Image (cartoon, rainbow, N blue to C red; front, side, top):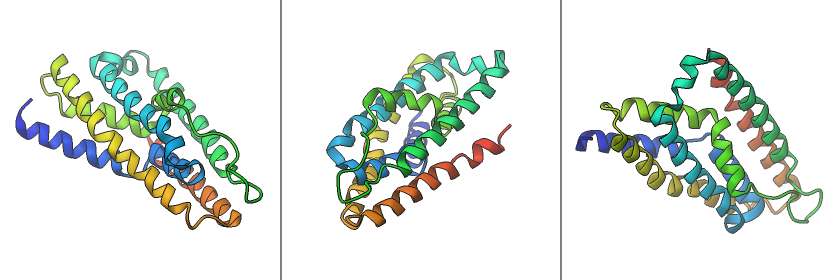
Length: 198
């Protein structure tokens, strides 16, 4: 991998990791509802789960869609249903009174597994392994995965911190309810590109 390609990969990893998407919206909601410390397993699950995903996609898992087109339809349906379920959970995370938020933050394993039904994660992994591994060697695929692993965690942590800081103005239960419903609506809106794709 040349120096120019590496710099372009780092830029792509940063922009795609820091921009809004299902992971970041859920982390912001988790930061607001559960705080930074309780959201750490969620953040680590995203970072490691996505790194493993890039490795597996880069080493041939993506060819499954070419061999079995129905698998793409099944994945798309599972993604939509699971994101709608997560949106419902976020919308109902706010307490009815001034008590702690209902439910628990996403665990490490749940966050790692979520990458496999996250449409944005699939797009990022497929783009990265297609565009930034021109020779498609194992070494290049490992470099792509390592770069994403290094860039992803600090990027997604930013959203948790943002949510945690927002919690200061969400002390009123009604404001927290409105925030959670807004986050849930944005998560549902993130499905728009998926529903339009073939």
